[in-house]
Image 1 (tube, rainbow, N blue to C red):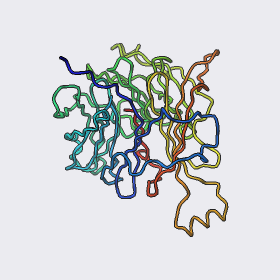
Image 2: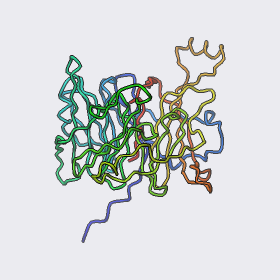
Image 3: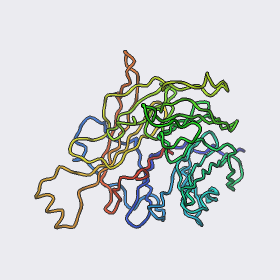
Length: 379
């Protein structure tokens, strides 16, 4: 008799926040039991985020440990030499350890990007050796095999840019092509143009993971902040807009075709058409933004996560906090919503089915505004 099939996995939102003791706290949130998002007064119904969290990971905060998700697994990559990477299976709650990329054994290592494509995880870093000498380390981890051991291998074709200057990236629905947009300062010769006369725009490249080939796509950048997600129903990439990321405005962009090998056909003089939703999904009035993220949950359903601190306090309220040795509350706003195109083709946040919740974060949670200060994962 064959064993019964495993129960259907119920995905959750996982938040990674820095604590006060040089540690990372992983919190598990069930977004399915949120209240309807029909009021702006979420603060009055704020509830404490679970403490202790689901998982605590020790590590120096400034070492910028990277986290990413693939399927039911959450991967954590500490850059410190001598440490091990690990993967948490959210279905079984088992933790598997493995080696870091080879570049992590060098000094001044920094993960610039961790990108999941199909059954592969790509790691990019830029290392500085002194005297302005730099080297890029581009490696791939295949974790789809039956073997439990991890194995990193170097990608033979190195990126024509400094990964530290990547402004956004998006994976093509063919599950083999990655698009990277890079600011002007990070482009390597011979693609970098001389500054002046308005020629200081960034550039976009695509990488074919099967052929291990880079293709220059043009002097323009995708309109997103960090990662963009492909939405099958919209047939578009969706992400936080590069200029409105602190307001929580999302944009959609037409998906470019993979490279054909014809340089004139693959290169474009301008970015593909894109649209910007009007609605702001982050809190603005009376709050100070302390970091946000966009998560794709599948089926044209998204989740925004924002940290904010109370700013509009009276003098008496501030004095009371100071006397008690406390800081203004650090709040976490989580919203789930759908996207659609309206009758005139405008990108809209669907009003039906929106849900939201506000949390107060535990005391000691870091409120530094740094690019790795808030990680939101769906697994």
